[in-house]
Length: 121
Image: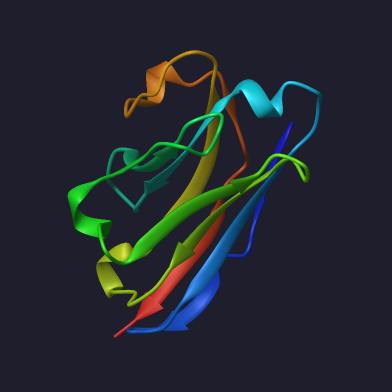
């Protein structure tokens, strides 16, 4: 139900925009999050946006560099990533939660397949 795209190889300091397209008619009532998982590490929270788009929250390491947004008419959530660093390299996952504006993977019910972001130094 969630399809993430937009990953790729980018040089440090560059930008990428990830997209996550959702199927179904309930997208507009779901909080949407982005998580990432680097090799050998646990999945970590990146950003979340409320169902209306009125509230957002970011992990400290991406504040000021990443922006989460959504277009409910297109059933799509985005993650604009600027000033990318090698430590941002990971598989990025979008996820959806009903009623919980959370930062923990267990709070999310639906998950996309992930898209790989590689940032070279």
